[in-house]
Amino acid sequence: MKIEEQKKAVRSGYDMDIIPSDLATFGSEAKNLLQDLQSRNERMFLLTFLVVNMADTKRKLENDVFAAAGIAQKNNCALTRLDYQQEAGLMSSVPLGENLIPIQRGLTTSSTAIFIPFITQELFQSGAALYYGLNALSNNMILCDRKQLKNPNGLILGTPGSGKSFAAKREMTNAFLITDDDIIICDPEAEYFPLCSGLTGK
Ligand SMILES: Nc1ncnc2c1ncn2[C@@H]1O[C@H](COP(=O)(O)OP(=O)(O)OP(=O)(O)O)[C@@H](O)[C@H]1O
Ligand SMILES: [Mg+2]
Image (tube, rainbow, N blue to C red; front, side):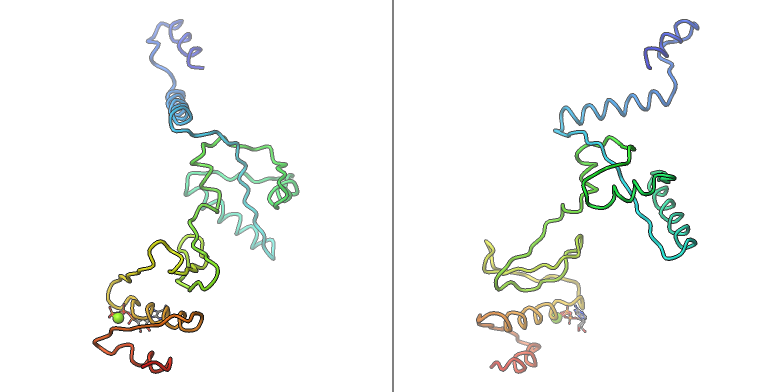
């Protein structure tokens, strides 16, 4: 396309560096993509992204579709409605591994990875593992047995009143209930006294 434009420019007698601006933009994007593929060990994937909207009433459905389109537009994407292909769209979105929708976009490895929800680092140990909260990304439980880690020590940091003591007490109670470990508390303020006596400690 660029050569065609340059030929046209020469024929019409103007500078052959002047090409349509969108062609220049696409040209540099293609060059960047090629560079990613060649030097950053990226691969090209063809991706079909389907959004399924379901609702109890037709009006609610229309509202949801409208809202979804708004969210996509805010992120510089356009959702195309699958008019007359809705069954194919639904069948492609269920986990059968079959894609009946011929709309595809080429994406690099790092762009494709965004769509895969399994990239968070999970900590979910078996055995006498204690509960340490929820993973902020995946919302899965963090279950960990310190004694299985390379370093079993821990330090609780946080702003005043953010729940440090609560977290420590919760962990102690958890350890008390599911392990035979000794719990030794050095507490000059006797803040842990009620917990200690509640757990029949001395
Ligand atoms: N997970 C939680 N769910 C509900 N309430 C909580 C939770 N964690 C802490 N709290 C409440 O928040 C308040 C402050 O918690 P806590 O005393 O543990 O904070 P702290 O970080 O130890 O504060 P300080 O820095 O003053 O020692 C307490 O009233 C506690 O009951
Ligand atoms: Mg405290």
